[in-house]
Image 1 (tube, rainbow, N blue to C red):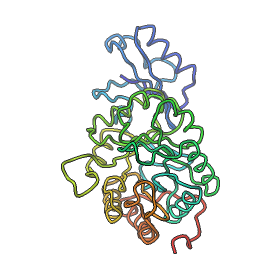
Image 2 (image 1 turned 90 degrees about the vertical axis):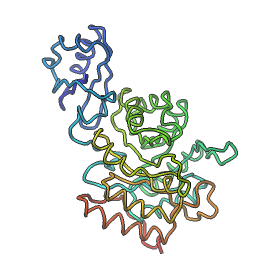
Image 3 (image 1 turned 135 degrees about the vertical axis):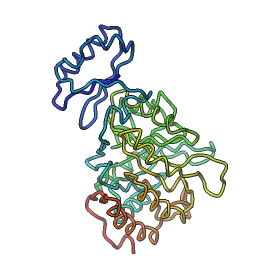
Image 4 (image 1 turned 135 degrees about the horizontal axis):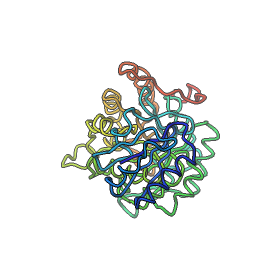
Length: 350
C-alpha cells in the first residue's frame, strides 16, 4: 500500500501520516521525487485500511499495489516520471544523450572526450573514476583523483557528471563530486549500496544486472526508492546469454516492458551491450525507435590507447553520424533531443 501526497503537502502532513502508520504497528518509507512525495507502507494492510488515511491533511490518494515494487510501479504513478540531473531532463518527450569516456585517465583525455560528446549533442558527461572490472589486474580507475578531473571538466564544459559508485562506503565521497550516481551491472543487487545511494540525495542511474530479470531490476530500484529517492533512471545495458558474437545481448524489449511496469525513465547503453564500435550506432537507432528516454555512449579521443573498453568507444567519424542520428530520429517518435549546454566548436568533430 502507498500513500500519495498532494503536491502542496507540508512536512507536517507527511509526518502526520508516518506517525499514524507507526502507531498502528507499521513502517512508513518516505520517497521524495521532483514532482511529488510517496509513502510506502509495510505491515498489516487490513489494519491500515481502518486508519482513514485519505482523510489526513495533504493526502491525495491511498493505493493498494499488487506488485512487489510498490514505489516505482505504474500502479501508483500513472504518468511516467521525469528525472532532472543538474537541470537536464531524462524522461518522456525527450531523448537525452549521455556520453564520455568509460574511464577517466587524464585531464586531457577526459576534456577531449567531453568536448567530442558535447559537439555530438550530449548534455550529460559520463566517466568512470571507480571501475569494477572482471579481472583484478585490469585498470580499476583513479578514484578521487578521477572525480576531481570530472569536476574540472564539468566546470569547463557545463556538462553535469554521471559517474559510478561501487562501494557503500564511497557514496558520500562520490556524491560530493557527481550530479548523478551510477550503479553498475555487477552491483545491481548490492543492496547495501542501493540503500546508501538512495540516501545520497542525488539522482541514481541503475543498470540492469547482467543476469537479472526485469522484475529483479525493478526490485533493485525499489531498494533505492524505499530510502527516500524516486529520482531513478533505469538503464538496459545488455544481458548475458549463450550468444558470443556480441559482448552482451541487448534486450531491446526491456525498454517498453519496463516503461509499462514502472514510471521511471528507461535508457539504453549501446556501448556495453554490443561491445564493438560498429554496433553502437545501429543499437542507438534501435533504442530511439523503441522509445528509450536516452542513451549512454562511450567516447574516447584515442581509443587505441584507452585503458578501458577502447574497442567500443566512438571516435570523430562515428560521432558525426551519431550527431545526425540523435537529431533526426527522435522527432519521428515524438521526441526532441535534450538541449545541450554551450556547444563545443564544430571543429572538435573535424
